[in-house]
Image (tube, rainbow, N blue to C red; front, top):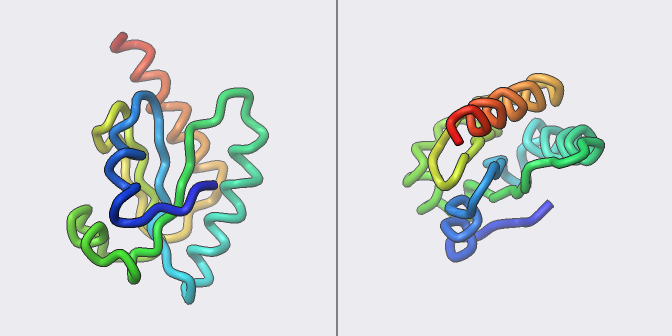
Length: 110
């Protein structure tokens, strides 16, 4: 999983296809758990989305731009646009199902 910063955030999320970003903080245990659990769950998929994390407290400009109010927050981007956002720790299976749903919509729209 990539670690993003102010400079790498925009190029990452505007890439083609599905991208998933976890907004967390080093001191936030639920964010650390979310990251670990997603790495394990999505790593088992045949074609997982690209996944990255950003420390929302260190990179406050990105946090404000994306209107992040709760950590962790997980955002699914599709072709550079926000496709879904979940606040708080989420079961990995819920995020996995959301990613599949967004991928299906993406395939249908193509």
